[in-house]
Amino acid sequence: MTVRAFVVLLGVTVLAIWLGDRIAQDFAAPGLERTFTVLVIAAALVAPAAWLLGRIGWINSGRIEFSRNSQPPRNGGQA
Image 1: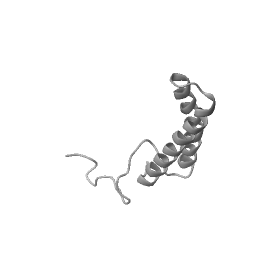
Image 2 (image 1 turned 90 degrees about the vertical axis):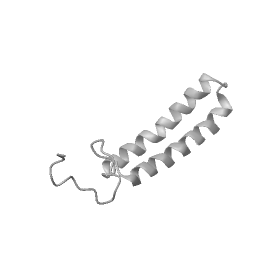
Image 3 (image 1 turned 45 degrees about the vertical axis):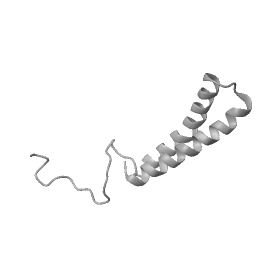
Image 4 (image 1 turned 60 degrees about the horizontal axis):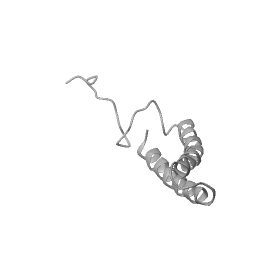
């Protein structure tokens, strides 16, 4: 995962939680029901965003890249 993908997913997640809370306030009872409603709304928004980022190559193989030019170690990773 690139840093750019992390920042985008963080923003999408924050917006999804905020939107889910605004929607759930109107029709869900406080407590576990509202929490579950926010969870479902957030998942419905974050999952497609993560899929799209995976399709364009910002998320790959579960690796986190902290630098823009990350290269594997020249000695094969041996100490």
